[in-house]
Image 1 (cartoon, rainbow, N blue to C red):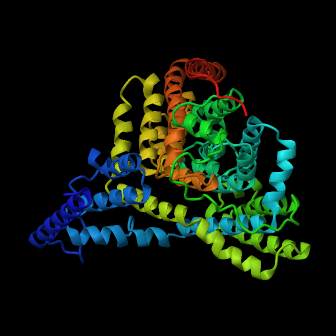
Image 2: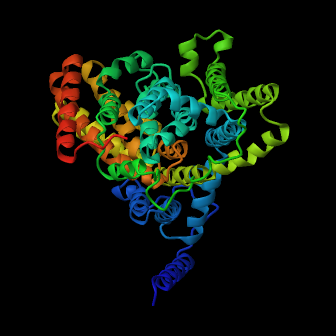
Image 3: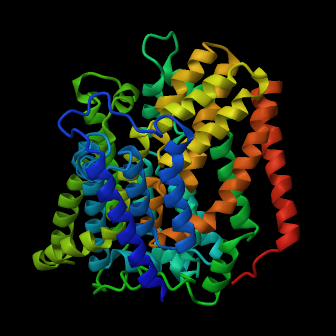
Length: 544
């Protein structure tokens, strides 16, 4: 009997069991007040994301893996009642797929994705991307230069990680392709300059999220506290240094080395899974110039900043920083995207590089290019919601509270590890901030240990978010680099774990020494020593 038949028979048996169990143990669907799962607020609440992530890494298939994780989570939540399982998956007010899609913030992100996809398609059709690629090939002569240019652009776009991922990818992909940089390496650079940059940028949507996570009523100034955490925020700082090192020294290891070697030989994808292959090969207007790419990108940046501070009340008398802190990034990005789309259309029509019919044909093209990340995001949000209703956040938060009695010096390292685990399992840094920062402030109401511990929380959350297959930032970095999502996750994981391990050691030392400069120097020193050891072991790539 082949595996397909065994799988089909197994599914029939499981469904039959659930039907029989449901009939024998009915649930009053009209009155679920006081209902709880047997796994609520226990370690079992982390089982659904663990199942999804493990399946994704083993089967190399992300859609079915996420769906299985959702089904397992809903089944556990419903105590194996089939009717409640279906209701939970689709319509639960905190976790159902329909509910998650109807959330204004989530829908705003999906609309922004589509708008960005249309803009990229427009820039390709108008010839802007081709013209920029030709210009860059005349000015950027090496693979190292192409990667450094991508990194610098990512650092410059520090406003928002979603915006960063898609903009950097669309602008730099022709350049890195021409210099035979693998799509996996491009996606890593995009991802490493998204959340890790935003979390140490005072003016960003992430700074606003951290500031808003500080408990109201406390005597702590959220924005000032955020600024003080920056030198202790080891993971993002060390990630930037590591990125520069591996680019300049041509050092790649793990599966990234295979992808880079293959790219040098002409294969940018390595695996048979290449969902974006050929999408850049659209009908190109050879009258296009570099301005046809730069103008839309510049307008998009200005429009998004304008829209975000607008939503924060800047034009009602609120100062710029406060307005940015209070902004609704989802609304701001959608507004900015539409403004940029309209202005770009007018600009292209004025330059006579695109017709109205061609503009309209770019709308479905842009939408189709974003179908894969939209599906993954939808499934990831549903899985995250299912994990939350099982009480995973409460369980993880209790780990921190129970650790407060241990040696105080080691608590920042514990906070980092717990924040990493929660962010990795749920795929969200912001949710981790909102859960753990109030607990940290409760343990350390003031002083240097409070700053170190909050920084450890931020650092651990970004580390987990950076490598989680169900993180929306990771998903959009894959989309920005037009790389298979699982290829991106697998190739960057060794880099993330390298920096994450050194960050844990650094927080142990920070809890003991408690000196900003000394601790940062030690952390950087440990990282450089580790990278030189890796370089000696695996060697450097050949230059091309």
